[in-house]
Length: 341
Length: 247
Image 1 (cartoon, rainbow over the protein chains, first blue to last red):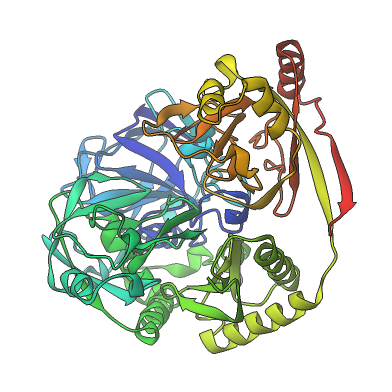
Image 2 (tube, each protein chain N blue to C red):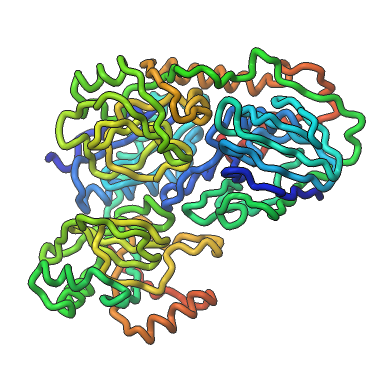
């Protein structure tokens, strides 16, 4: 069993997996990784099930000393990682010797970085998930972010890494986060009928600025006022959906993200296609969004394409010696089954 | 207002979620139907459905579109609606929530009493005579959305919200009641406090209340409050409940 010793917790570092599905009817939010794509890749690069929990680091990364030899991978925002003060690459398998120190800086582009570790983290599983939700006081450290002096145990038991070669995602598959204007694909509704034609035109024709008021619950956007028909689009409280773009009385949209509340009472003008949620997760204040309407069939087809990418993941990496890895089968993995139905 | 729709409305909510809306108001009739459909779907475990979440007049169905297409999903949901229609009389739980009212435990009680031209003790008398139906849990872990506050106690939200009202707080707003599991900022009127924890992350089943439960608040003294609070802390307190046949 290995350990991670935090010499610095970073700006906001929590354990996240694919979320606490199945407990919204008890009032628990789904939580989970803001950028599930980066989390899944990080896991596959170290031979984990793709839904295993990772460290999610926001804006400024942690400084971590590893106890025990292991393998890790870093994906998502580029936090200029160094091992023992020597720069290393992200989106590839990294071999760690006991005592090594990983140092991360502020994100150069993107906002959130994921650290996977072979075997996963040995943290409490609450209602079938390892995700940390500070508001609900659940997860690692009873729901708080990591800080200096914290220790997290890992499940790995790994001594023969000398035989391993390293996996690296091919460059063309690595998402780029640096463009200032981001195209976000959305599906109409639910309850877009509560907006005027003018309001809907404003939404699709304008650029919206990511404000400084962003967190794992939602992203508030600045831009022209989106016009409602009556009563500010207020509804009888209903359950909500991640990616919904709600417009409260102010006329300024809010995109609901991973730690959104279970229920709420505002009309959504549109909902972000699941495959584009990582774009939101990696956006920072000052970035601009342009929304593009697609239909349900197209959004579901994009999801299918992404699923195929993960099914064939080991065809998209370079320099590999996969037999040594005992790759989990996407559909056989029990954890994935639980996460993905 | 139409009450219950003749046919449920299916509303697309992104590529992996469907809203099933069965009426356009908050009513016990609609609630019973929502509860019936929710319980049926929970038992049936439709392949490809990840999660179902009820609310006042709708049910959200989260699904994996790679495992079930929307046409098939809608036909499954229509069937659930039909079956649930046929189930009528059910049993429900009545849950007794010991509560201390007023003072530091309910700083808005005086205000509420004044608004209604009643003595605070009369507000407590009226409030504790009724059963409050839990339409669903949501917003925070274990938090019930309770309806059934009598017209005489109907109270609008406060103009200035309070910061972080404590867990266990009993609040009223409009014709609704809530009981907090965790502290949260709120604009509702805080009238009392229960030592009972409806959300206890130490427990294997951390949430106590279920959809369709009825809550009855029982006034207690500060002494009793402190005694129960200690038992709750030690995990030896058992919340009193009874089962009855719903009309």
